[in-house]
Length: 339
Image (cartoon, rainbow, N blue to C red; front, side, top):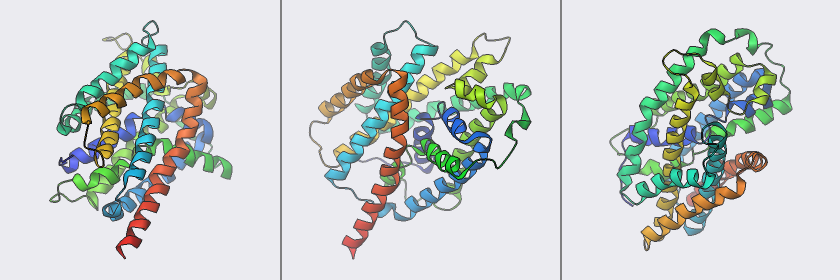
């Protein structure tokens, strides 16, 4: 599969993948696990995220995978996609479509990905552009809650135990999910455009600011007890705002989230099919259809709060395996072969 990415396209794909799979669900479990020190812990998590990006940038050319590792990553992305689709479908059933059969919602979400992945690679690459204005609108509308924030909620500081710091850094990994795509698509970036240095730092700050804002506004709006009772605090903040020109602003942003979800699933599917075609060029259309059929049916087995919580706990450790351990092993193994 031959395609070229500009620097902006590359960073946009990475950002949509990292934010779309976790942004709305991230603040509640993270703050619940860390308490008032959540913003401090996320500062440290942001440093770790940047160090991982620097590691990827230095060694991405050595990240060459064979069929076995390719199958591992396809299984990993299938797991991520199923986890995400189960969560978004469950949330949509609660907030927006309580009377619509969940199978229909899943089929609608996945059908767009199927169409895009049966088209050219440029279709998926350009699809993420439509989210740029929607993300800006979302951030702007959250500013309406400014007068309702309690700035003393961040105090007292420094009371988290070592165990809470460890759990917090683990929970923060949810915001890292998708970062491994850097290793797969970095080589497709136009060689004339520089990535390391300032451009990479700019991406890091955009990613960090986006998630840090979600943590901070949730921390300042809710009490700790309130956060524990609300799984999607950002949607609740929007719902609580009284605006004269729209009655339920949260539903408007629920539809934005749905579009965000569709694009994220499309990028996930594109990544898995891209790796698949590195070693199997035959039956491309058939394999694309089979992949999307799995995306429709597998989430149906996990559409309950219990299973979603289990998947969300497991996904952190699976992510660490595929974003840190396996890349490290592949890069070290490639270095030894070169010698």
